Amino acid sequence: MLDAAQVAEVRRLFYAEHWKIGTIGSQLGVHPDAVRRVLHRMPGEQVPRPPRRRQIDPFLPFLSATLERYPRLRVTVLHRMLRERGFTGSVVHLRRIVRPLRPSRREAFLHLRSLPGEAVQVDWADFGVVTLGRAKRRLSAFVATLCYSRALYVEFFFDQTLASFLRGHVHAFEHFGGVPRQVVTDNLRSVVLERRGEQIHFHPRYLELAGHYCFQARPCHVARGNEKGRVERSIRFLRESFFAAAHGFTSLSGLNAAVWRWIAETAAPRPWPDDARRTVSEVFTDDEQPRLLPLPEHPLDTSHRAVVRSRKTLFIRFDRNDYSIPPQAVDKELTLLATETEVRLLDGSIEIARHRRCYDQGQRITDAAHTAALLAQKRAALGSAAGTPLRLAVPEVDAFLQAAAAQQRSSALLIPLERLLALYGKDALGAALREALQRGTPALASVEYLLEKHRRTGKRRPPLPVDLADRPELEALHVQPHPLSSYDGLSSSPTVEESKDTDLPLPAPVAEDADE
Image 1 (cartoon, rainbow, N blue to C red):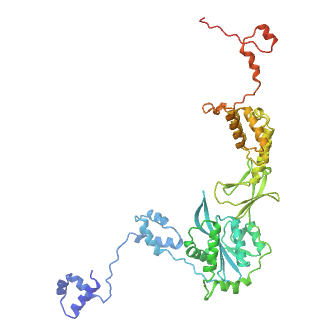
Image 2: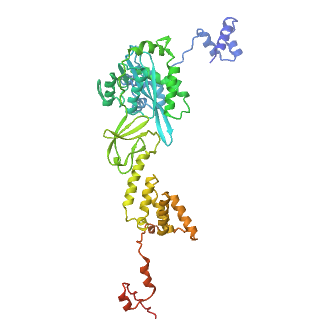
Image 3: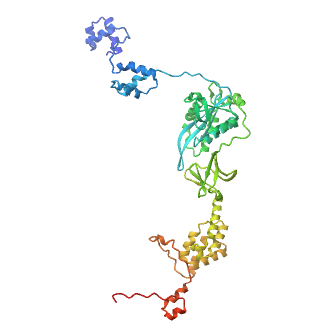
């Protein structure tokens, strides 16, 4: 096929220079028939090629009728239907054919305008997963956009729970300095529990929020994201302008401080979409903020509420971490109230514990007072256990433990004292405990020092611990001590008459060896 330059040269040589067709073909190196086709059509006219019969042509009427009736039908379903009717082409080839045949159902929309102070649109924006210690948390942003002025409020959370959703509303109203008359949301579970057409069953906590701040809850129609296009555009603005450059934040509070600074320095001074001569902050301050409903005297309590129960330990579990409670609250139903910064535990209406909230995983947040109260109870129980081997061997241990508890020493003294008893004996340990009490130093280090001091003074060898690794059942073996003088009579063999005068038993007769 000749290009445009060759076509122009053929026409010049034939009409201007009056060359013959054969001469033009031989000089330009083209076939004479190609020269004739160029000369027989108008300049710029393309020679139409005869249509080539395609494999899909017999199926086009069926395909057009099916798409007219079911415009959203998938190509894979159409391909299966055509294969059953004899079509042998691929689904990729069919997808190229269906694209221009599918009827367009694009909906036309009006540009809606809102009155100042009339409505605010709110939504969640997902920003992926972040790592905090051993925990992986979902980072989400609560975004609220006033429909008239486009003023923004953004706050990041580590979840999309009901408590965080309510808290975002309260903080947004406080940021705007008032409450719009309508709040436009999605049909998320925090707002709508059930919906059938226009009949909506709202979440009771969200109705509590609406009643407290006197706004009308207005969820969008199902699959109608265009009804909250302003907040959707704000989320895109947030991703591109702020979060794309927000790297290296180390805490949620630091990220929120950065986004609030971005709102004041970037989002608020931007041109107002309806009039580029004014800024968003000017429109909000002059036109919209005075028309917002006033805030109530007290903000709504948006704490996460849950009923919890501790079984045997001092801890209750919340959000993948453990929080301590007083010993008297064990095995009782408690009320847990959690905000973004702290966790409180109530027994009825009485607060019994308050902790900072942890967003890590597998952590134990402990109040020292709770542990001290439990240790005091355990020390009293140990003091009353008169049958323990340590107390039977060394009665001075009771006074020593009480003195150690008065000075808030650790309750983990029993195991070391039992070890010292096995190494040094009851007499040395009892003397060391008495001397430590006299010195006013009821501590394990003091007892160990006194035992070593007495050992060096008496020039005795250091005690060697007994290794019972091969016989672990002997570690818990306890022998009741008794006077050793009862064994003195066994050093000789008394007669029958002597044995009658004493309480000692006769030695058992020894069997003679059969070989002897």
